Length: 274
Picture 1: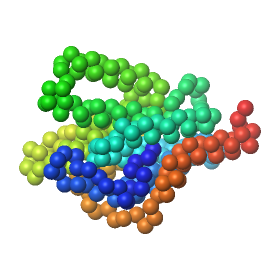
Picture 2 (picture 1 turned 180 degrees about the vertical axis):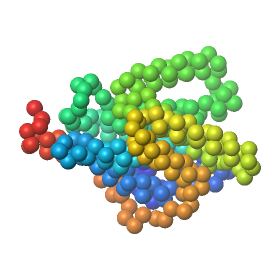
Picture 3 (picture 1 turned 45 degrees about the horizontal axis):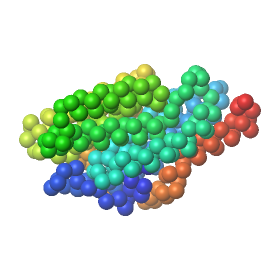
């Protein structure tokens, strides 16, 4: 939940040596949009009375938040490759802090679900592992037996974790697929073959985004958000102006657990929590 901290001041490393450095200015806007849409989703789901019939808000505005968070996390993991695992640990810590108030939210099922930070942290870890594979294979530091063992462990973790985390197995795939697509889109040349290859790498992200939701409205908003993020990687990032007010770092780090704690307190005062 902490893409780049202060996005406007972030220094992005190139995806590969010699590639142009992409601008991360857009993430300043992305941070505000992600927090607002996430909060709208949660307020309409947990706080608003059923009589208000605000389910449409969660199926539209609320479906922007997760693909946008995932896009910013993938952007950081791809273009700032010196700190991705430390970044994944930071997201995990936020998830641990937020888990208790998150579990207090009223749900249709009593099954234990880990909040979105676990999805983002595990997804980034998987994306970092996948991205390092070609270099490890090329340098001979990863033999076939170890590759098979690591792949089996990764599939096992994905299979088990997908049963427990928010957005399930599809959610865990978003960041690795984003990273793959963003890298190809960012480095694509001017030839038709290069552009077709980059477009093909972007398709899995859009497919998985569509599979994450059931209603047509939710699918449309999720896929549109992913498409916008992919266009940014393809070069639209150059067009983003600086955000007038940068997201305060403390607000960015504390909003996710804090807003769940505030909603839990409200529900308790309203007598809706046991």
